[in-house]
Picture (tube, rainbow, N blue to C red):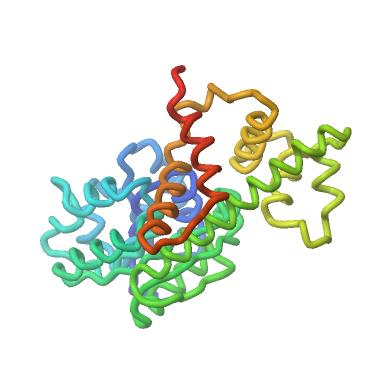
Length: 297
């Protein structure tokens, strides 16, 4: 550990909070800020310091991590009334973005930060809140080699796999590919569950039967775990929503609550259109959930 580095974390949502907790648990001096101050309390109990604004994070921290829900939220954190770029003076050397944003936006953010002499690394993650809590996330990284090297010891506090894929934007391009694989696997699993029901096969039987074979995946394992624990994991929710749809039932209770899912799907599909790549399975998945998202409640 580079003892002189102080870390800042902005965005303490379902995934950001456990990542920040693991950074603190690894012994890094940590300051945190969140738009909803109450979400900072568990971090403060774990030894982190509260910042009054993103600007204060930039004034007191060497490396800043962000995990935000949209590009507009990132712009607010950077350029808002008390944003990072309004720090005077700024101590920050590097911003590591764990958010999921289009590659073009990542490059734009990097350019804006460069004007303030702050380097940028895009480092979206895969593995969900469960992986964040366990420290087993996969991190897909884009940026200059020396910047990635500076960020890596901190990334290791919450990740079991860190892959440097190229310049800024490469991590986000890989996250889109990751989501295509995730959503495609969930769509296939939902179809298998729907087919199996017609032949008397319960969903947990299907998951158990494929374990150890080529059809097993992290998605199927998490779906099975959630069934056994009878909890409401995101993967179980999405698979069961598709299964319901294929059996003629639409989950109206999800209307208006799929913003993060729709953002990631839209990003992958927009990137595919830009490069002339057909994504028929993901397009179908997007259409179903977009219909549910906009149902009257």
